[in-house]
Image (cartoon, rainbow, N blue to C red; front, side):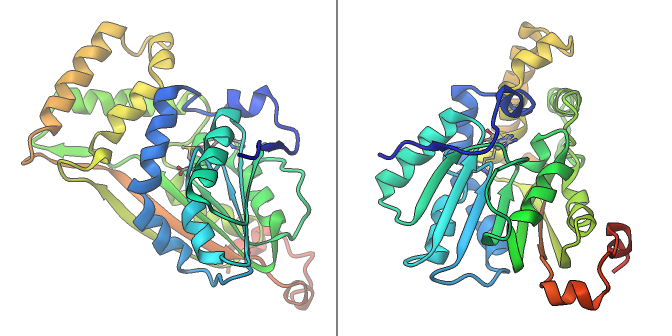
Length: 301
Ligand SMILES: C[S@@+](CC[C@H](N)C(=O)[O-])C[C@H]1O[C@@H](n2cnc3c(N)ncnc32)[C@H](O)[C@@H]1O
C-alpha cells in the first residue's frame, strides 16, 4: 500500500474546524456513506462528460468517498486524486484503493482550502458533504474553481438539513434534530448549505450552473435511516460541552428516537440533498465578456 503523501499546508486548523471531528465511529459512518450515497453521486457525475483519460480530484474524499465511482468513469487512462485533511482518512483511502486494485488513483493529505496543486489541472473538481462541514465554504469553492481546467467542471453534493420530520411525530426525534442543528452550526458550519451551492458556484465565476434537489427519505433496513442520530453521536462531545444535553439525556433521546424509527410504518425525512455543477469558462469566453467581469455581475446570469 502506498503511503498518502502530504500536500499543501494542512495543519491542525483544517481538522480542527471540521464539524464532525475525528473518531473511529465517524470514519465507520463515512465508509457506509460511500455506498449509501452512490446512486446520488452517480447521477451528479453523469452530468459531467468524463471519459478514459480524464482527470478528477475529490476534495475531502474521506475514507472512501466517491473514489471508486470516479475511477470507474475515467479508467483505464485517467487520473483520480483523493485529498483529505485527516491522515486517518487518507490512510484508510489508500488501503481501500489498494484492496480494490484501483489504478490511476493517488491519495493526498492536504487542506481543500489551499491544496498547493497547480491551477487548471482537472477536468472535474468534486466534493461531497465537504462544504457543509467547513466554516468558510467560499474558500473551498474558490479553490475548486482554481483547480478546474478552463472548460472543466466543478461539482458538489451537499445536504440541506432544515426539513427533517417524522410521522407520526416523536418528541425524541424532534429534540435530536434540534440538537443536531444547534451543535452543527456552533462551529460556523452551515447545515443548510445545500441551497447555497449554486450561488457559491456562480460567485466564483462558474457558468452553466445547474442544480437538482433530492429528498433524503430512507426505509427501515437502510443504514441511513438513522443518519441524524448517527451525526449527533459523532458530535456527542461538543453537544455535552455546549450544554445542549447531558450524556444521560443523549442516551435516552438516542434510544427512544431509534426505537421509533425501528417501526417500519414511521415515515421519516432527514433533509434534502443538492446536486450542483458548474463549468469553468474558457479563456476566450472570459475575454469575450471583457472579463474583468465581477463575480457580482456573473451572479445575474
Ligand atoms: C462528511 S466527510 C465526507 C467524506 C466523503 N466526501 C464522502 O462523501 O463520503 C467530510 C470529509 O472532509 C474532510 N475535511 C474536512 N475539512 C477539510 C479540509 N479543510 N480539507 C480537506 N478535507 C477536509 C474530513 O476529514 C472528512 O473526511
